[in-house]
Length: 265
Image (cartoon, rainbow, N blue to C red; front, side, top):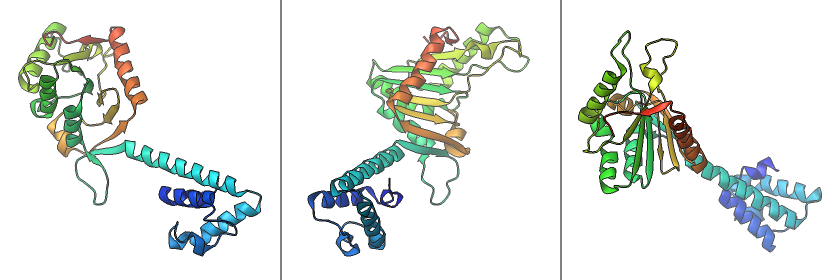
């Protein structure tokens, strides 16, 4: 396809396609006849490209079809650009375009209708961060909220696993969760392993809302990460991606790798 014509904006492509299709634009094409449909500085080049295509054998219906196809492609690119957004915490660079992490997280929690999956490595100041989600749970009693959080074993700490889980559950309920009823919380049992060779962390940081909206980010659920640290993430509206991410976590539950935190049931 023509690179030059593909550089035209969606609206210009549609206008030229319809004008060619209806006979309002006809070969030989001129800069003057195109001046109502494309930016002035591009008229000569577009006219030359249309005439070149016509002279090598592309008939008027084919030109119209090509222009419509290029317009559809441009619209798809524009829609894709809008559905993927940069999410940022920390200092803003003048002229940069990004969503604020803390603001977006609150918006996602406030907008959930059916289900939300939250995964994080560290939680602090959770009563503020999860306030919108807790309020939404109170408004929608059937809302499914599942959290996947890291339950750590301090370095060289041999405290029994049951005691570490109890401490985590008590702290989460008293210090991190703002509502009376906590969500389902799961952990990776390997994070509590005594042997270094068996140890692993639940390090993923993401949110999936209604199996449609996805935030994948470097930011933990802490005030510093949400507001001050330099953190980067991607927000995507994509049902296939959202469902794939949910299924990943569900498969780990089914396999027994991720377990429900006792005391938060």
